[in-house]
Image 1 (cartoon, rainbow, N blue to C red):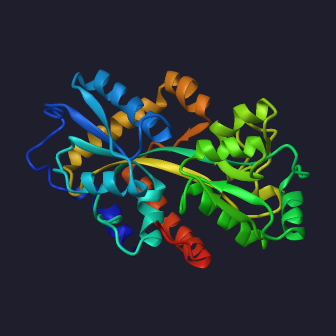
Image 2 (cartoon, rainbow, N blue to C red):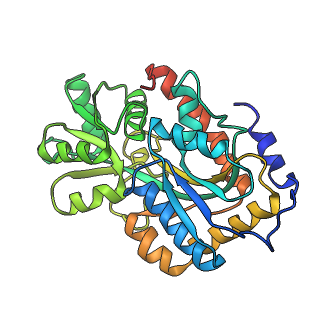
Length: 322
């Protein structure tokens, strides 16, 4: 995991391999999504597919390949022809969490892909059941210390963002909570609302409707600073855990050694998509997403900086992938 700098340096030095922006795409393009239809990852893939199809006049389809914490889809793309016709919408888990979560991966998270462009970040929200007698992070930490191991939090699986974000929270707070693992975010959220478990981290977009309906208390967000669309909600960091962040991100990748001009063409189209006022208003803001569409180097830098953070959390908490 120590060669990210080499990846960044090589991105635009790849040979054109006989392809080119003038001829690409000359046939349908497939965007592989490592999740079932519905949900954030699928929505990102379908948004890109629609806009790419409109821009290029060539069909772009989404292929869902869920399973094994993104490993099935990632392996498939990594072994595909590096011609730009097979792309991957991947969350950070694929690249900076799985390497520490599993003893062996069927793909190389560092050299096995061509980073094309960042897509979005998703801030996580800390929610609790309305009956829990806490209204902020400090009160939650105090209660957790009074009742070590008695407060249950939901995750969407071992090693999921909902799990690791809470492990980091516990480590910084010096508190002990009990994990309850679910097969997805929705059943965990349902049990928080029902009072079967007391709290969880979940995407802001999933939390806000339930908070506005009075079904949960939204006590903080994991953003670096207060969100423009939720200025009244404090961050975890300002509420008692300085430096804490719970932010997921997604990027667009291709197989290794993609032609530089093809990668550049796709990158330019991604940036157009996320700069579109209609996409900002009706997709990004509706979901409380924040665009990180930028250069491949910026995406690589994000991966490089995130990997040590999650490696430490996973190793310290002794988390192992299932």
